[in-house]
Image (cartoon, rainbow, N blue to C red; front, side):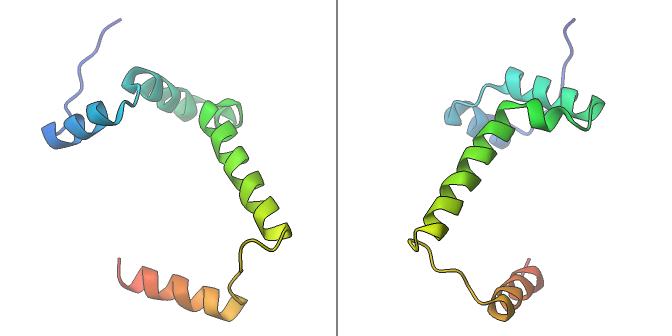
Length: 83
């Protein structure tokens, strides 16, 4: 089956130049809307999982300095206020 969607030209050009496989991403998105648990089975989940494992290891090794909780909350509040 073939369908058409309307995408802003600027956005389309950015996606094409980035090399993103739009068909794969669109299919993943549709599947995610059908099944709440599909994220766990998705390639994006595997990428996210690898990223967070990497960061966790960096924290455990002391390679990353974490913000104190109060400072972290203040940073988030500032971000939200400026969005």
